[in-house]
Amino acid sequence: AMCNRASSAEATLPPFPWRAIFILLACNLTEPIVMAVLFPMAPFMVGDWVARDEVGTWAGALTSAYNLASVPSGIFWGRLSDRWGRRPCMGMLLMGSASSIIIFGCPGSLLHALLARCLGGLFSGMGGLVTAGMRDLTTEEQRSTAVASISWAYGVGFAIGPLLGGMLVRPAERFPALRGTIFETFPYLAPCLVVACLIVLSGLGLL
Image (cartoon, rainbow, N blue to C red; front, side, top):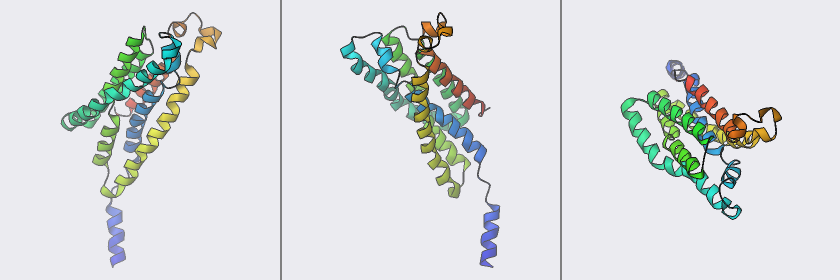
């Protein structure tokens, strides 16, 4: 009888929301990509504007700008999502992140690049919204599996970001067909455009 009751209880548990969790993970994946795509590009970008012995200092500042701006934004977006809902806030984060990374890909100066990274940091905080969304969607029994997958998404994002930045930076120098195009004028735009496209694709799942 006890076995029958246990089987009946398991049968009444809702199925694991794989599709919704996958959409949340896709959105979460964009943040580490945006954060890490800069890593291989920063020395080249900063080297265009500062003396060689200052490249390390300013490359570090450029890399840190996103993270510094993200400190207050995570709290802000978390509280806003409690009032407005997870989906609208996630959509705003994705739109802002895509816009900021394109702006970052067309820098006219070091200040421009720093401000673009700060803007991107202000549109970070996806991790907190995704965690809250998973709590909303899952039962207590399902939650550990769902929340544990967030670290997997971050790991994949931190692998994809530097790869895109390293492979696509300054494409006109390697591909003659791109000389004289916008990719020669803005040699850091190509990886940023690809990242922006990935952000838009992940956002389609929220529609």
